[in-house]
Image (cartoon, rainbow, N blue to C red; front, side, top):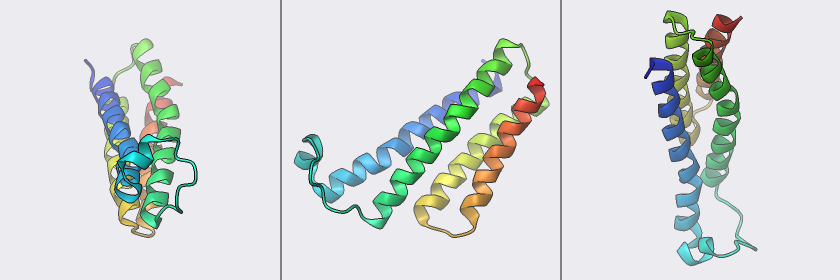
Length: 128
């Protein structure tokens, strides 16, 4: 398996973990029975829960772009230093983004997000 595909798998694992943050947070905030039900009439989410949900949405939005880039590069037989580095930058930047976002650290979150974008641009530029 190429490094790019390995980074894709790592990104899927990271996405799974990120999706579970608001799920587990909901259980902790509202109880398992409430979360297992229809979840109508839930109390207002905490600031952390709102942040976790935005993180989840943002990760999914980024995966919508990253996955086809990696798969297109693989289908085209393109795997070079630029695509490897781009995929690695994406994964590390997204991990940092998640930690920074959940911690609520201002100003660093957009820097980490931009790092992930740089990684995707590196892969995309190798395709054109």
